[in-house]
Image 1 (cartoon, helix red, strand yellow):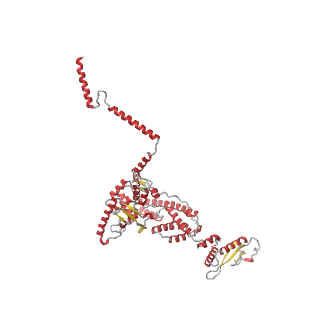
Image 2 (tube, rainbow, N blue to C red):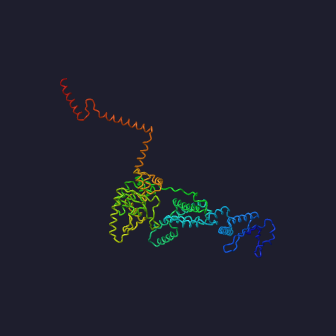
Image 3 (tube, rainbow, N blue to C red):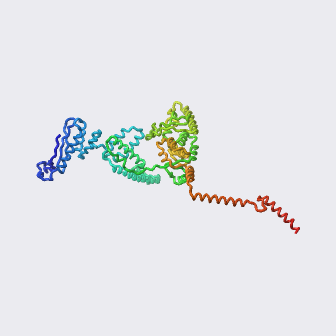
Length: 552
């Protein structure tokens, strides 16, 4: 196809405004004109002509180099590949219109052979939409991805070209999120202060009413209370982007994943702590929990279960406290998977929240599918619960909703996980015990199993963890008495010289004290050692003394 380089003068006639072209009087000067290229492109599908044109080259050599580059790109498509020819032509036409750099020949060859878009103008936003539409996971997972994309990724990096996304862009995004957190905290503080000030203004009096009205208007104009984007959420945003870009690499759209290399603040997962007397005292003084994850002692757990013994859902609290089921798993447990004769139940489903709506779903992970052994007491509790449920079914009659679930509402319909959490919090507050979350009751079950000396693998399987490392990471703390016993057992294994000397000195002191005590009890000469015998001996001695006096 035809192509050429030529000199071009951009000077214009001051009267008409048209380019002078070859009639420019300065054209003969060496550095006055610039160079341009023009290359004929394959015609469009409708037969119309098109071409690639570019000007502004400072030298003929530079113009010729770009012309050769264009011809090399056109030569990538085979003669019997009309589709490839059209793709390259469309790419060059767009590059000419957008005045963007010519694409690399080898990169274009790779894209063409892989069936990828030759025009790398796909934005991050467009790719995230395409990626999310292709995901086939449960609805709650999709909602979490959608939130990350809508709230964080699209507003900050959605406009960038996917193939030009860099680590620095992501670092800037997370810096922006941290800066936004500071602003949110300041705005929340200002709004809270304004609300507190409004609460202190009396209602009576015209001046007070006018002041309250003005303050309410000012509060309405403030940004609403908002939650900050915490470390765990930032980590999830990074994970979402990383997963999306990995799929882009798998489809050979990009070759590098910047999300795999960006550094963000580490997330420190809270460790489970036990409610000791010292921690309870501090909580009562300050109102602050030592850790977001708190666990009751066996005595406290027993006190709670005794307190809620007459509650309609006692069997649920009992099951979670001893067997560690998740909230959704307990709400979604069917009778068909609960075999009281074999003392076991199979976790095969759960109820999850989507907003405030609930839906049935598979367990959280593949490890969530598990068989949980039941002790005799728990089996008896579930039998009594089933009897009461049968009585309720008869009372409701035709209005009974037969869901087949172990734990239901009064009419047999699904339990709402959110309402179960609210009920648990009210029961804990009424019991007078230190506060824990419903999920912490599951943590307590794990702690009790570990304290009972159950192997970590069995504990992990019972809880539905995919790896024992997860169990170890979460439950590093143990009950105080268990830790004391472990410390004593460990200390006895190490032979220390100072310990041996201390024990020897203690034995010597004990022996000396024993000897002293024995000496104190030993009777004097002529003394039998017993109080009564001593008195008799003294009286006998006096009588002998009286008998001797007359003889003298």
